[in-house]
Image (tube, rainbow, N blue to C red):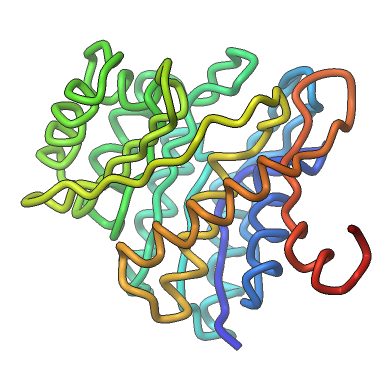
Length: 267
C-alpha cells in the first residue's frame, strides 16, 4: 500500500483540512498520515479561531513519520505562519520526498484570511519551488500574482506568472468563473484543460483540500501528472454532485460516495 502524508490544519467540522485529506486518501486506497500545523475552530458557517502548532512540534511530527515510514507523496495545505513554512521546507529538503503537492490555502470560503502577507511571500519562496504541482484557486492566484482574474485568458496569464515564480507545474482551478468550471494545467510549455459542468449546490466545503489530496494519492499510485489531475477532477466532481447537506452553512462533499454505492450502502 502506498503511504501518503498530509501537512495541513485540522477542521473541527470534518469537511476540509486534515480530515478531508485523510478521507480522500482512504477513498483512493492509500495509507494516510498527517502532520497538523494548526487547530481551527470551524464549521459549515465559517472559521472562528486558529491555534497554530509550534515549530518544534511540527518538526517532530515530520521526523516521526519520515524516520519510520516510506512516504510516497506529500500534500501541503494550511501553513499560516512564517516559522511553520520554514520548518516544513527545512525538513522536506532533508527527507526529499519525490512527490509534493502544494495547495496554497490563503482565504477560507467565509473570507477568513488564513495566511498573512509575510507568510505568503515565504510560502512562494520556500515551498513553491519544491512542489511537483501547485493548485491555487482564482482568489489564491490573484493574491499570488497581484492581478485580477475573471476569464480563461486571464487564468492562463496568471498560471504563467506562477510558473515563473518557481512552480514546476501549475493547476489553476476555475471554480470561481461565471461559466462552467475549467481547471487549467500549465507545465511551462503547454496548457491542458479539465472541464466539468457546474453543479448547482452550495455544499462545497473542502473541495480544494480534497482535489489536491486526490492528486497526491494518484501520483503516489503511479499515474502521470495529467492522469492524476484528470482522475482527481472526476473524483471531486462526483463528490460535489453527491455533497452532504450537513450543518447550517456550506456543507461538505461526499468523499466516499463511489465506495458506498459499490458496497450497496446507498442507492
